[in-house]
Amino acid sequence: MTDPLSAAFDAARDAFAADEVPVGAAIARDGSVIAVAGNRTLRDKDPTAHAEMLAIRAACSALGTERLADCDLYVTLEPCAMCAAAISFARIRRLYFSAEDPKGGGVEHGARFFSLKTCHHAPEVYGGLREREAAELLRAFFQARR
Ligand SMILES: [Zn+2]
Image (cartoon, rainbow, N blue to C red; front, side):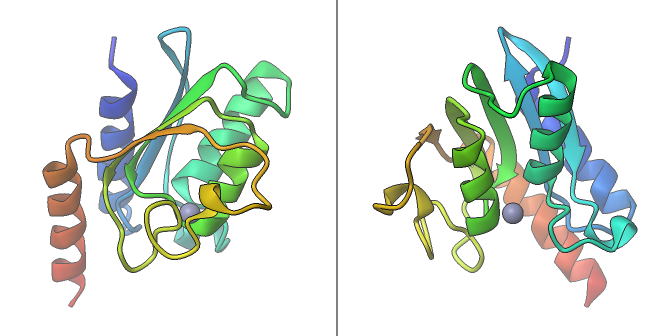
């Protein structure tokens, strides 16, 4: 079975192939992957169709709940402020991400959403997993588009 982070990377590569910004996310519960998604903002013509948002929606739909308290989210890039908020609302237990995003991130950068007083649930956060691989994928994508 694919581990959640590898599933997220596969989704990121699929996004790349579809000309979407190569970010992928997966949600795991009790060691199994229950949702996987890649960015789909172009295809869906939806600025909120980030990998994390789609994975959260799919996981909630699969479990029939709006809370993912015993779930962990894996994503290849530091989530933006919108996704960080969604992660908080979903009560995700742990967040694992790969590359940092100094320009658009909202966890270690920018809004630092989970540190805000108005944030009522913060997951445990673990960054830097397979960071180089994720950063390389993004670099290749933006280089090819120039
Ligand atoms: Zn996002």
